[in-house]
Length: 127
Image 1 (cartoon, rainbow, N blue to C red):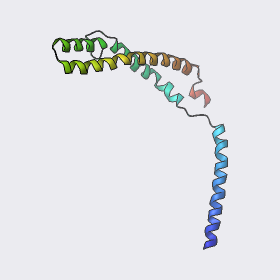
Image 2 (cartoon, rainbow, N blue to C red):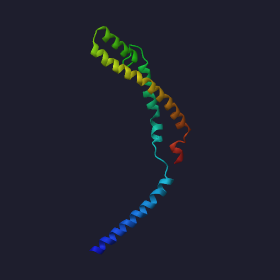
Image 3 (cartoon, rainbow, N blue to C red):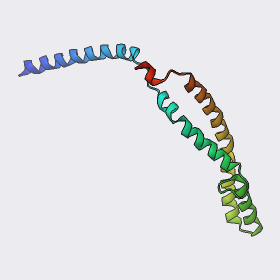
Image 4 (spheres, helix red, strand yellow):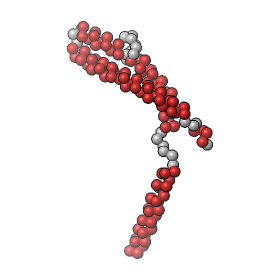
C-alpha cells in the first residue's frame, strides 16, 4: 500500500508539472479579457446617465437634485434659523458641488472611450 501512495504522488506531481508548463503558452496566445467589449457595448447608456446627472446638477432652483435648488434650501434654513438643518444641507451642498467636476471629467473620458470603441473592429468581423 505504501508503494501505491508513492506512485500516485509521483504521478500527480508529474501531471501538475505538465499542466503548469502549458499555462504560460496558453496565456501568451490568448487575448486579454479586460472587458473592453462590454464597456463599448454599455457606453451609450453610461454616457446618457452621466449627461443626465450633469444636466440635473446644473439645473436651476426648480430642478430637484440641482446645486441651485440645494443652495436655495440652505438659504431658507439659514433664514428660518434652523442651524442644524442648515449645517446638514450645507454639507450635502459641498458634496454635490464636488460631483460636478468629477462628472465633467467622466464625460470627457467617455468621449475618448467612444472614439476608441469606434476604431475597433466589430466583434462579428472576427467570426
